[in-house]
Figure (cartoon, rainbow, N blue to C red):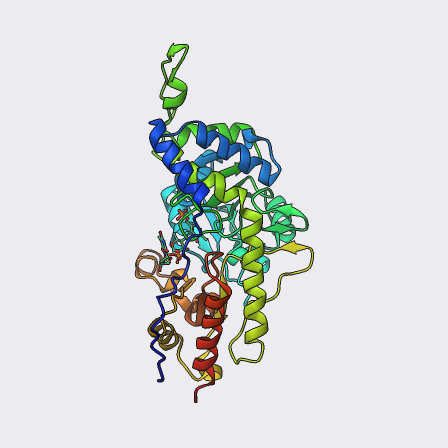
Length: 391
Ligand code: T4K
């Protein structure tokens, strides 16, 4: 197999685009001496609520999307052992959060074109023990929320949207995360809005969100910022057995400016997406399906399918060759049943969900960060084209 070693610096997949504003805000936070949950987190929550068009009382910042998913399922009051239907084509956190909440994950296969959970497969997976659906807006593409919400209403199910890839995503003009009972966002280092580690819960019901906020901080009625103020010390009460999932001001210091640039970053990733689409149009590899009408794609992952028969190269060999060429890539994702833990615990086999299995064995994510330049993108295009054109 041909390789094309490069003299150029390694092009990191998923490199976060951190600006001077973020660096200055983190420095100011450090100099202020208040690093924990405080005014910057409160401001980030308000800005995020404005971004998604909901009142601030319907959002709560946490330290990861995994935490947001876990706390949302607890705050939704789903009885222990109940079944939650989700997708096999996702990061392990989606399924692990269901287990952390004492619930039972049930997988429903994806649509091979959209890579999102298939509503027909959801309907087929419903049993008398089903209590919730956890769709993932994969790669930033909105799930078919009209059909999923119709199924949820018909069977009286809770819906918790995994929006880790979907900060900008909309379905029929409505933001992802505002359809279900809860929407859970990620601000991990490689996500579209970055706080390093971080997450946000957006809830339909203010009381549920208030409970989630308390659960995310040990079950305490007051956080430190509200305990120590000009009016003297205020006692807190532990009203729940909670978790340590609160976001720090240090993280929010990044988020404030990342969110302020969310539209510009989205436009840059769309530019790169279209650049790839044009350049790869005649190559044998399958490209991401174009965004559906009346939706807004979050452009989080640009995933191409390396089918060895069509492309003349195995997916993993393609990954290695790109790495040798100095281009970082990602794999989102080997399907959940490919992983030994779930095979041993549930007896799951990848073949049971054939679409997710095939996508997981062929997918390659190409660099799409707003931190990459046109020249970087042209390098990616050149090396991909060379690899797929070389007999
Ligand atoms: N639901 C879904 C659908 C998710 O994708 C995730 C997390 C969650 C829930 C849970 O969200 P959090 O609890 O984490 O907020 C990997 C996984 O592929 C991704 O799905 C996962 N998302 C994330 C936590 O980990 P990648 O593949 O984008 O990044 P990673 O960590 O493999 O790094 C890729 C490249 O990025 C590295 O080669 C270098 C670069 N990088 C990475 C870091 C951490 C940097 O340049 N700087 C950095 O600081 O996510």
